[in-house]
Image (cartoon, rainbow, N blue to C red; front, side, top):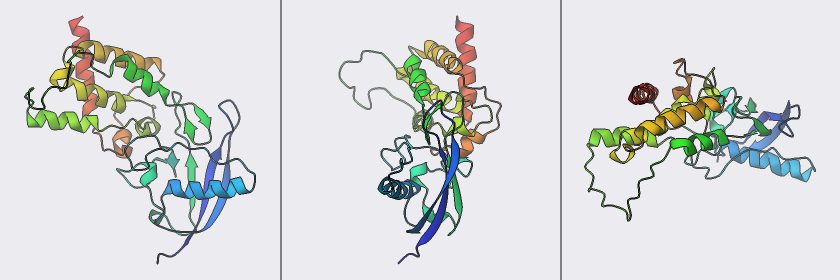
Length: 251
């Protein structure tokens, strides 16, 4: 049986978007090291509710590292200490017994705090709505092998398509740039035949919307790649820049 742990959670509490916030420390005893960080927050919230105190607000959904809903800073690192994992896949065994863990929301102008650890990431939705799609009327679904795609190209497109839009790249970047997210979405469709008809319009609209949302520019720090739970490569940012220049030249 796993030895029980005692952990101290130093959590950013902010009751609303325009209200001042502060760190509040809570101590949780006798928890299993096999629990996830989000399960620890569930335990804390049960205790707070019993005391009549407001629970800690945080985003979560699948809790399997697939949806990209969860996300906050854990000891200053987006999602937490273990690379290639979302916040819901960070386990207490990766921390020391008696350790103080600091949790705070993603910090970016384009991701305003809603409450506690929850931020508004709808800027990503507006970027996708600007051009992250194909609108060709194909009728019924074509046979999987009807459009030949070289294996190398298909793998490159898939490497970009695994982006879950969690926003960790923005939180980690010193410029709060969304370039890794946007470039992954642009690269995914630019590499496939289905994305060719809207290739020029797509990159122009998505980059323009990214700028409108207030994200900073990429300066190649590489922090985004380091914290991405799906290990998206910054090579996609270079592809996005080539696509953007090509689109400008075609006008």
